[in-house]
Image (tube, rainbow, N blue to C red; front, side, top):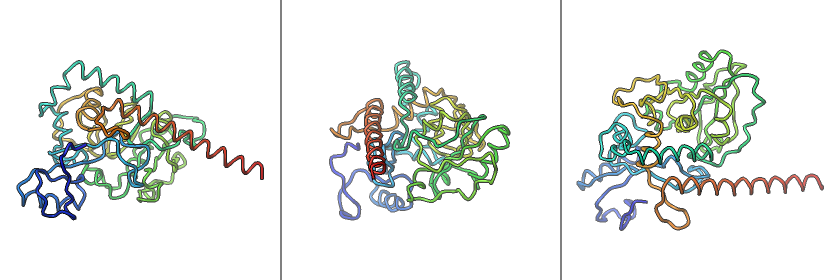
Length: 326
């Protein structure tokens, strides 16, 4: 994905000659890389998972099908502009693509592909929500993992999940409020903020890993801090309330509860999709190792998800058969 001739590891090859220092986002251990880059007078580039990542979770070792390569910042750090923000703000040469009818038409086709397929960042969740048939409107509140850097660097409000849930309850007095737990928490690899969920009869907690598109079909408004599920909700045509500053906030597409000073340009959903899925990330085919586009990556994830669900169904059927014949 990097197109590098050689990749040297800092710890195993500390004296290696390098042209660029690469680090993973804004994690604490990236400080060493930034110091090294300054000492050697080299450029530094931040990497992070792309927005169409994989079937499984990164915390369980699933390899990404996309990454972002950002020499200016990183998309979840709202304290400084990232390459993605600069594209959307009209500050780069790439920004001119957002006015290109061919690029916008491609983004429109990508929107249709995403809506039809339901593909998101992680795609291993169930198509079954476990929710009872709806007797009234539903709104969705999205939790994130504890100590998620995107919360701190994304200006998320303190006590975010409690505030989100209370706002959803207050602003939709006749609705059922669905609180979605993050899949990393459900995997046992991270902790979340379940203790902040108010005890209210209108609150229902989804504590299984549900595919985002399946859940979005059940709800109307969506309340987030900085979760990518807010971007998914915009793709699927929902109204999104942001209690932080994710990459998709501040462009006139979201209801923003935190002031956003730098972002003064209104963008369409097609322009947002073009920037976030076409111009910003890089994609690779998991079989050939060749660079591909978002369209091919969506198709790959659809095929992998279909195979995963078939295998899961076959395993379940086999298990039930054993129980019934015992």
